[in-house]
Image (cartoon, rainbow, N blue to C red):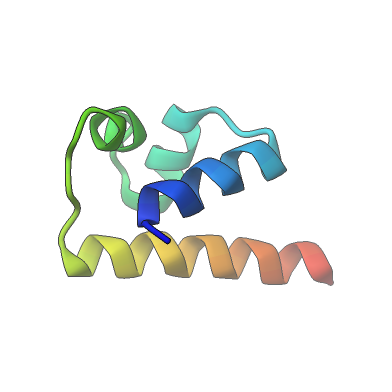
Length: 62
């Protein structure tokens, strides 16, 4: 499962615009659009993205 696939699933689940996700997860509003166009994030960025999604999911379960 690619990180883009995980992000797309997260966006649908949260009903969140891609620019908002990019700003919150990585301070980059173009992140998701760039990934859709072929950008491959480095390991550190993938870790930030996955940590953001995990943290947000954990807060939603409270």
